[in-house]
Length: 565
Image (cartoon, rainbow, N blue to C red; front, side):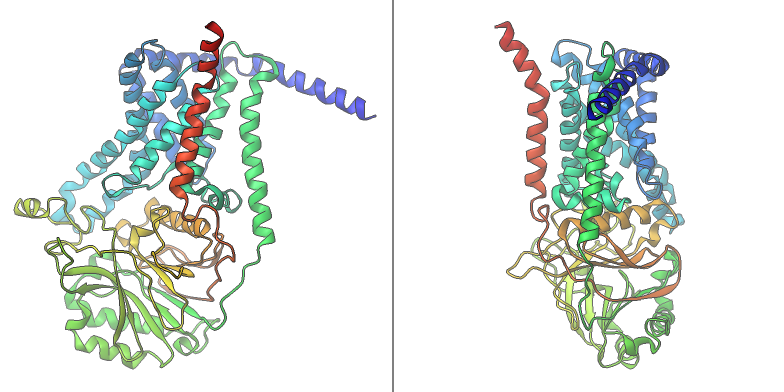
């Protein structure tokens, strides 16, 4: 009986191997045409590459349809096939780099267009910059994908091994994008799996860069179905292994979520205030008293979890840049807060801090997280270390300000950067890692150095700059990924959303959607007992995968040379 089942299974596989001859006839001709376009270059290659990149953007939140990368990467690989037809390596570099640039331009234009919304908050001052920013930023970021495609061309050869070159070279480009010139790893390809709780768990093993390599390799593998000269069951080996790897990762993730209970820290009752204050009103000094009264009234509302309002809370959390003033300069503000907070409640808020600049800097203003006690006194500060270029400071600040330019925050001279990420001590909370705005998007850079490891990440942000666009959803997804990588809960307060309490495996405990004025009450999840392997090893994992990928890409080439010798 067993032999009969095996025989029928083998016949089924054999029949499956014969299907592509009929089924993939049209796609195979399209693949040949795509390779031809890649070889000829010109407008056709640029158009197809840009379209391929734009399709890939659908894999990112809020759409989060990761199979879109199968078509996106497939077209990219086919274009590189055409661009790498030349035998001399030098002849490959220019067409491959051009293909990579247009792919990156399409990808970043389609996934980052929402950045232009920030220039409309004060349209009179910054509106004229919108088209330049929307086009210039994708054009600059596309230089990394151009570099990655050129590196891949150096290792390119017929067969499935070229996919290892593709994955390793583009992962290298993404790592560079996340680190060069202060870094901007936004929407790296590994985030395609960020909306799947099961697939996201692999970040605990390999981190963002490992997930990026995994996405590039596995989601480009279906292109092997269109490989000329490869028939029968062999056509399915590469794609089958790749899809099997995805299924295995999902199964492991589901088992991890099932077998690791979510526990809570006793005695901690959090309240996150999400005011959803319009960005064009948030920084008006003339509305200072009105804004603070509004914050306090909203913070005191009773809810099902906290029927007595703030009396049932131990820590109140407000978002980034909550005040349109410097707190120490307005004595009335401390008096209002002291009158509103019960004795057992600490306030953690984002606010501008004024103080002496660090060595080598000249601005006295810091974008900070501030801890305020029930008497209205500031107990501790944590200054933002990783500032946003053109948003919080201008490169070549003095020269550009002399030309009349300002950063979006319009703080004269920009913000000063904190000297180092340090732990934050909040009464009523375990030791916290303070992260302001997009500081949370940098893998392996969210934990303060020191003898004691924090037990939660505290992320205060203001995504109201970007309105109801994909930006806030993408930011939230990246914050969740850090929780999985570090095995640590994350508490996130955002002015207009998305605010949430997130468990150490990315579980959403409580959640406030975008553009909703509300308070969110919830407990604090405990960190995992054992630190995930990816925590603290992001770069080691990245370079191990890169070396392995490049070695696997050149191994068949060396073997053939040995046989010829």
